[in-house]
Length: 111
Image 1 (cartoon, one colour):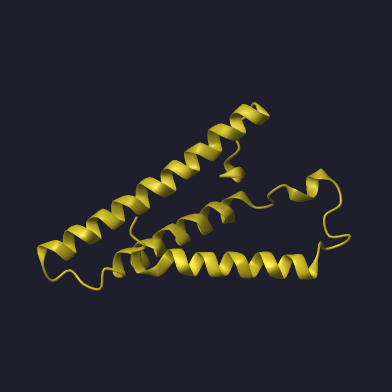
Image 2 (tube, helix red, strand yellow):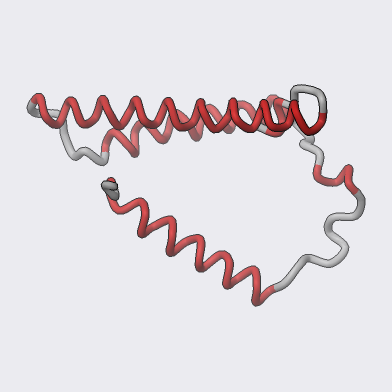
C-alpha cells in the first residue's frame, strides 16, 4: 500500500468528520418524503458534472507526482493516470450492472 499524496489520511479525516457531524445534526425531517424524492432530476447535468470531476482528477492525481523531469516521474504519472481511469471506469460499470440486477433496467443516473 502506498498512500499517494496523503489521500488516505485526507479521506479518513473527512469521512470521520462527516460521520460525526451527521450524528450530531441528525436527519433532516420533512426533506425527503416518498421514494420518488431520491430520483435524479437532470441527467445531462449529472453526466456533465461527472466528466468535469473525472477530468479534474487527472490534473490533481497526476500533478501529485510533482513533475515529469525524468523517466521515473513520467512513469509514475502515467501509472497514476491509468489507475485513475481504471478505478473510475470500474466503479461506474459495477454500479451500472448492480442496478441492472436489482431494478431489471439500466440506470445511467445511478452511475
